[in-house]
Length: 394
Figure 1 (cartoon, rainbow, N blue to C red):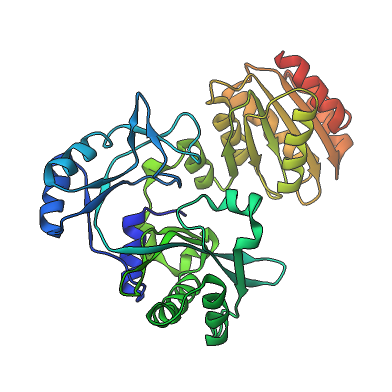
Figure 2: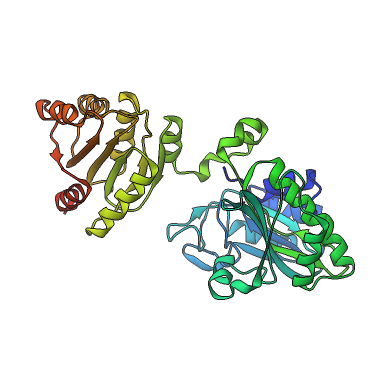
């Protein structure tokens, strides 16, 4: 689950991670009032969307309007907010369609001496969180990793003990931080590292992380993603979820117990197992098709879930055909066949449907489909299935 920057900074403040004062605004007038209340000579108006790269992002139909704007008066704050709220902002992470800005965050300015990068994710090989820092703050970290990976410094730490003092010293030396900056870093790194563990995060990113003229380290950004599987331990965080930022079909699938990600192709995929789903998408692409989604119905799929899966797939106007690729392990092929027949009766299939079944009770499942009145194209293996669905939609 993702949250907005202003929400992340509220949590940071509670956890002892230094942030600047800021006020969220939903209208241009509120942004102007926020500037006055902050009382400083400079403030920054930031679009609040679930995507990075806002500083270089541009508003559709107004390329001059950036997603992050420095303002020096209430009128400038009002103008910046007016140019962002209810507009679509395109960044490197949104795709060309952009995301609608529903609110902005007006934040106080500060004396920036240096800009750094900080991120924490899980190192699955080491089974530990890894703290990553770089001197290249304010730059997309993907570009740094590709062109200058030697500028990213990493320290894995034990979640039970947090970041050790010697690890902080190592990172400060590599970043060229000393004196008051090093003292501030010791508190900052420990606090943000503990925050990651306490809140069961899957990612924390601060870009830029700044050092002020008097040596204080401050989070100038807060991009946070929580592990969905751990949210039962943090029910208070559920109130922070912004449903308007999420794809409605993905929310609908989640409610039905399905793993679904909408894509921009025209071939719907209904598969059991994440690995098989990825392979199915790859082979569709290999044979000249374009997947419309990732959809894993899981090993225990029933008729209700399969029916809902088809409803979600067919609600996408770009979906011109569906490939069902099932390997019956936990789920028997007869169960899937019965679910397909029931789904056909309930919603009907108005696009080509290619079905490939393999595994437990496969012969019985195929026979059930052959004897039904469901209009399907049978496939003997995954390659045959991919070729047939690509040909059918073309």
